[in-house]
Length: 599
Image (cartoon, rainbow, N blue to C red; front, top):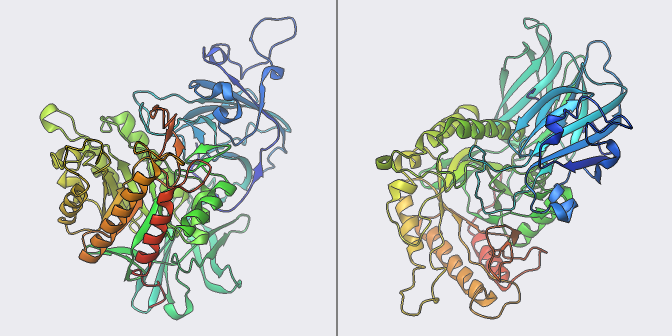
């Protein structure tokens, strides 16, 4: 597997006819289907190309075929395509946007690589295997197990298949592998740190790499530098630009620049923005000024790809809904979301919290799981390095489980993950959310140890206090426990975000149980809590859970029917009564967020 950042290059999409076959007994592996096809008149191998079910890529097989909705296991994908063989001094790569959960890839009878980790892209070198007429087999394993990340139990639907686009790229043997741009403000200047890496067959031979920054709106050039890169090694240069020449990126003014790079034989480009994100005491600063973060968890289900990996239409629809809500912030999912969603947020002005699915796993400290999560972290950082919308890297959710007296603790993974982010991307903020899953503080050292809190830039708190208020008339209301939890976290002297809070309701339901009015009242109280926390300084942001209802197999009650019903809108994006309350509350708090203009 090769780590390449392709930026905005489209390559050659492999969008022609695909086929799939579910294989619950693993016959395809035992019979080595990649080696040969069945000869007429012979029994083995027990398949042929005509038996594959027609499908499209990208998509989740659960959504293409209703009979596979709850299927988890091996699915074999087959695709035949025409291509030209690489020329002399030329390389060919297959790039997969996402395959859930793991896969093995065979091209023209030869294994060319594999990948584990369902929501991060990967690239395979197929230079020696690509022919004019090609047969591609992708063996996709969509199975939860004791070593997977996410784990065996999670509160979303486990979609499987090839969820992201598959593309073919041709590159010269000396090519641009990766470029990262980080930005900060220093006095009257914007400071850009440009890091680049090339690859080539001769390790000691330097390649001249020209890099330019142009305003996308008018094409004007803001910067041009030249690096001399040694293959496989980072080269970097810092550029200082007077602030009066720069248009800063913010939710109010999501201004983008095109970063372009070229060698004698290769070209590369991406979009980026110039902005600074940092903390100061309990404040989160965007471009040197405090920012109030208000939003919702964007758990939109794409009709083709499922959850956490939106296509362009679903991404833009979600961002427009967030904007209508007066939100400037969203959690992008418990897994890394798609390039389409991240790009839509960068272009339209939504700040993002991106996360790896270290979620409800009691043994994240075990090497198999922690190593997989760290690889997913590295892929997430690499592929979204230049996205100005990405504000937070989250190392997990509700998964610390620190019980040292029982010989159980996940602290090691979380401390290592925080250190990894600080080393590889100090321009963004490290966070984690969880702890206090019940209505009481309990033993906070078990669910949110102080050693982890001290490592974070921003502390996230998930709190569902008061969701049972009224269910037992003789029991005191517990909504006020939100304050207790949030003020405890604020005692660490860092910014605090209420990263999850909400209550279920079925759109149209008029009763108390799962009723819209109950949800409307609860969100009205949350807005009061939010404004109180902002005014008193112990809360810097709120991310409601959740923007929209979404499918989950662990919610099986008669009202839920396989959906988490905490959405402000239902699964069809139809608003519930609480939507208007949140919209009005966010409009009010938005006035507290000063526009992020150039200093």
